Image 1 (spheres, rainbow, N blue to C red):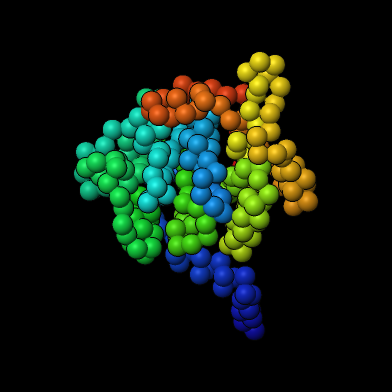
Image 2: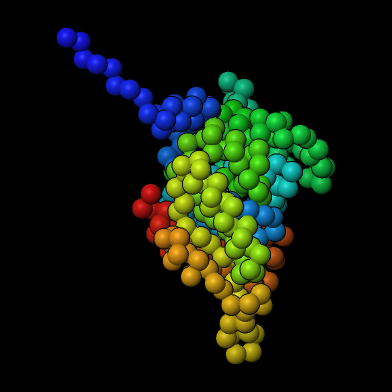
Length: 272
């Protein structure tokens, strides 16, 4: 008697549906881990966390790359002092820009004639560009690719979760009460999409007093530890307000900033 065919579960259909959306990487590309950096709102410092994370893993000896999926608000090239793209490989695939320390970068601002030109595109076009940045770029060998997501839970985050084999996300927040509600939206979206949450990073968490070096909680004391404990998640880093960030990023020298508050984040990423 022939073996009875196993009946598919709703989870099987969901997994097959997700796999059908996957974009194949370009020939010559080998990406081991893809990490999304997300939040439920803008202005919390996703790009900063993306850049610092890529730099931290690069300093540990890993080959890193940044895919700037924040198409209408790209800031990664400026942060790294990257020059515009001018070349393609023999297959017509884009060749990413490379930072001073070897971090590979892809962003719409690397393709614009002027970095201040606005990108006035509808959602489906933007989503298509993100897929091209992944599937039509010769990334070569990458140990950790960080995807700087746009804020919210719209077209582009959905496209990234469906089209790229994301290994996990880092959720960025700030201490304000309002942000914790917005963070919840990003966390809930990740759960619905079956994307693992690596942990939380709080930006603008505090600043050090220039006179006594004690922490000053400009936006109120952090409640992130309590939130994370209730959700069973890890707090990976608390980033202070530091004028040095602005100076380095404005000068395209983010790689020169070597903070000591990302050790837990690096350790957690190495465990994935």
